[in-house]
Image (cartoon, rainbow, N blue to C red; front, side, top):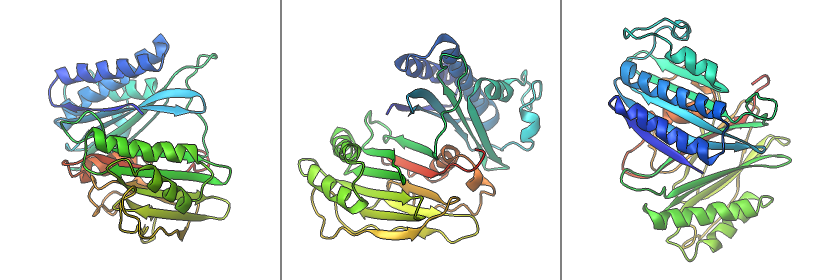
Length: 340
């Protein structure tokens, strides 16, 4: 899955973000209008990160759903935040002496967008642009689940040693996250072997799939791997893990339920593989991440964030809790809420 992170520290970085977006839309065979929308959204977001946030990052990733293709952008900064979000989406409103069309233009040219901003914490903007269909519109594909992710290599590496895959089934969804030991191409090879195994065995239970992955990784350097299987009908989440993939179920006004992985390394050492079951309901949020993200995260300082799109949530967690010295993957998933 294509993804890229562009550091926005000076004006020329906006052009680099636009070039990466153009490469992605070309890879996906976007029509001219959709490609232009994506370029505008990314360029305006990068400029806002620089002018209003004092610099930050723009993260792009390819989206595919039900035969449709799109790109998603996360624009992250740790600036002063936005005091009045409603006014900021009105053309002509600006706090930096500019024309004041940036956020309004992003809203108009996106298939989906959300923003989260807090005073003195900064701003995270998520926007998706989907390729237009035969009818000309570019709607967000309907889905039973919403999933968001940030998955990036450590600085200096081209390949990410982490991997993840989201899969739907008749009863619910399954999320698999793998962290190849170390980083670089050999770690990426181990993570890819885990993800390909999950792709080929959709109907396996979590512990059976983990056993398969353990066998498939014997010729690699190994990986930490976790599998979470959500059964919407039975309202339970079944989990099995080896190594230090962190996983938790989060719900408003409830304690965070951390899911248990056994010590070990898929492909090398798996003394015990067990399945653990936890309650799940339609408003639960599943968070899974590699050890490139700190484990001490909490939503207590982010009022209202749990109700936002999982991509926005993943972006906030990455921005505020990434360690910066390893590959990092954070995936957030939930059932689609009524009307969303």
